[in-house]
Length: 248
Image (tube, rainbow, N blue to C red; front, side, top):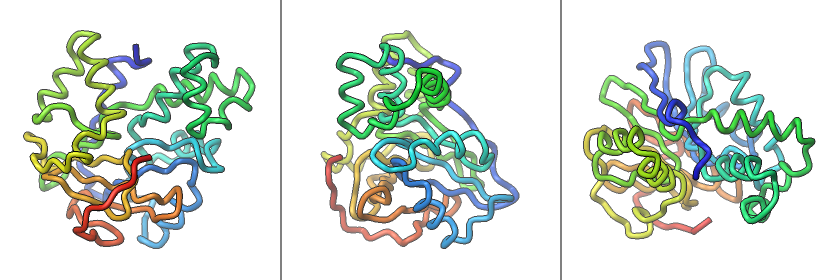
């Protein structure tokens, strides 16, 4: 069973009337690179907000800084990615067994070098992350999840997260892990919402399938961080319509 609670599954934000809202792809422990991208975009912390599609940790050298960003930057908000979930599940299992091994081989070594008290602190911070973020804009509602939306309807997905434990866990697994839409290049989109923003699958350039925006462009590896303006749905750097992908 996924370590999640109903209250942590969906977080909603009112429209930003003071500044701009951006979304960013997977970070994977590269917060200094992310800050550089924000600086180049003229990000203003006193007015702007940044929404992350998750995978804040693992692989990069600055995973320990995740608490600084989540707890001390009131303009930064994130959904839970599969890497956060691996940390949470591993800690719940005593940091032993298959769950821990899966996390370790996927960049989680930093977590196992911590004391048990530190592991507890980080696991609790990561477990508090929602699976879904909704952001109001003047043009309509924006949804943010890590990987994909299982249903064709946003409303159906939200309702399913409040359903039975079995159904909610099934939906959560898709939100955290699925690559079905991008691997099938499915253009059908998601009804009942202006746009859905996801990461999880590393691309050379952002890709748009229906109204689903895939924005993990490997800023944590050898690519660049893409910032998506939630009001205009325009990317910085601009979107290249060519669809190309790597599976990470």
